[in-house]
Image (cartoon, rainbow, N blue to C red):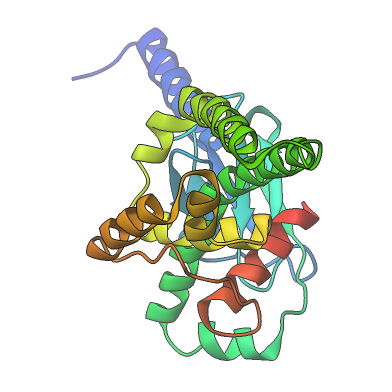
Length: 252
């Protein structure tokens, strides 16, 4: 089949259009100093995410909305947060030093790096909830300080009223999204509540309700693999990694 010059031009134009739109959708992530492509960069928001391929490429158009804030994260590099509509075709990330003990954990195998990336996504997912809860605890403590001269019975009912108002507000805003948390995200949230509020989830329930209700929820939590008495210890284990991730979040 022989195409007319007009048809040839038409197909050339269509080809160029497809190529240009494809390249626009593609983002390449490179090292700011060496200009080499960065592989396995975590690119995500609260709902979804992708990773860069062996050429440092990623495709964002079918994953994120134009007004989404996108996080770019890679071990050993400063974390970036950019609104999708502002993301350039080439994203440059700057390297940074990380603690040697964390390097030992995450550099031993591909599986270790994969587990670290999952931990980072989970922490970034639940950390805002822990921060919000902490703010409510501060508000609660300041109110309770004004009730020191109340009788114990009056203080009890006043405390229950305050708790109910906080509970209703949290459920109204976050009930659906919190219910969608995974088992590992729920476990991390319990520890982060202790980090932010300086008291365990068990102690909070015990203070707001009573020891029997706190004991009931502790038993229920243990059935599902959680521990409401879990303390956050940033000096060792997974909590050390979580603390490092949070420090990176706070720097952005």
